[in-house]
Length: 444
Ligand code: GLU
Image (cartoon, rainbow, N blue to C red):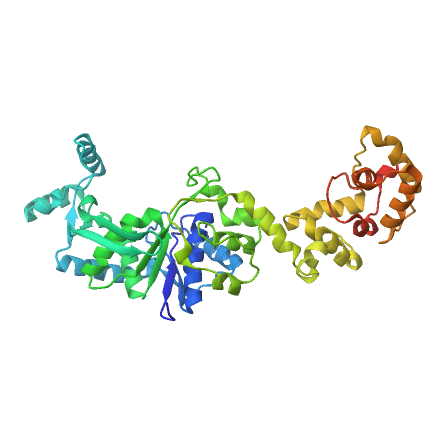
C-alpha cells in the first residue's frame, strides 16, 4: 500500500450509522491512514425519496465524534452526468438492455424457476424483443429498466478477507442499473465512482459479495481495472443471533447518549473478528499502527454491546482531571475538591454518567446497609466516628479505634463499615473517600 491508497466509506443517508457500518467505516479509514493515503466520505444519495439531509448531517457528526476525519466528501446526487455517460458507454458496447417486466411478472418467473428446481436468475427474455415490441411496451408501460448484460464466465478475485473467490456469472441475474423512472441505482454509481475517484481498496460487508462480482464485470466493460476487494463478516449478537434487525438500536448516537466513549468503540471494532486481541487504545496513531486487515477472518463476528462499558470505564480511569473538570463541576462538585473527587471516583465508573451517583453519595450520604448481626457493632462504631470534617487519616484512625473497642478485624471489621457508610459492597478506597463524605446517615 502507498500514498496512492484511496478508500471510501459510502453510506446511504437513509438512517444513522450503527455499529455495523462503523466497522466498515473504520476499516476503510485505518487502511487509508496507515498507507498515508486518502479516505473519502461518499454519500450514496441517488435515491431522492429515501435520502435525507438530516442523515447526511448525522453521519458526519458521528464520524467526527469518533475522530474518523475524511479527506473529502463526494455526493452521488451531484454526479448524475457521469453515471449517464457510463450508461451510454455500456449501451454503445452492447452490454446494456432495456427490460419491461413488471415486479409481479418477475416474481412469477422466479417462482416457476424455483418450482422446477432452477436458480431464480433473470431469463433475459427482454434480449429477444424486437424494436417494435419495445416501442409497444414502452408506450403501454413507460420506460423499462436497464440491465447490464453479464458475460457468462466465472468472475474471480483474491478477496482481502475471504481469500480466492470464484462466482459463476450465469448464477446471477443481469443487474438492473437504472430504474424505469430513470433513477440511477447504487451498482452503476458505485462502479463509476470507484473507478473515477481512483479507489484502490474497497472494504465492505460480506452481504456485498455478489454485487462485487457484477461490479468487476461492469468496470471491465467500461475499460477499467477493479480495486482490491475485502468483505468483512457481518456482526451477530452475543449468542450468534442475526443482528440486522437490532442494528437500529445500536446507532452510534444512542451509544453516545449512553456514555460510551469513542476510543472504547474504536478499540473494540478495530480488533473484533481478527486474530489480534482487543486492546484499549487512547490515541488514533496507535490504533492505526496496530491494524492489519490480513488478520481478519470470515467467520461471523459476535458483538456484545455490554463489552463497551468496561472498556469505556478503563478509558475514563486514565483521563487527567482537566479532561473531566467541566463535567465534574457541572454536577455541583466544588472546584476545590474536584480533583480529589475524580481521584476517588475514576476507578469506580463505567461511564461519566456514573459520577452523578458517587457525588450524590458524598453530598447526601448513602442509605446505609446494616446486616442484622451488625446492628450493635455499627452503633458502637458510629459512637467512635470523629466529627466532620474528615481527612485522609480519619479512616485509619477510626477503624483502629473500632477494632480496639470491638475486637473485630479484617473483613468482619471493614465490610460492615463500608456498607454502613456507602450502602455498597465495593467502591473507592475508604481512606480517600472519607474526606469527601458530607453526610453519614448511619449516624442516625
Ligand atoms: N451505499 C452502499 C451501502 O451502504 C455502499 C456499499 C459499498 O461500500 O459499496 O451498502
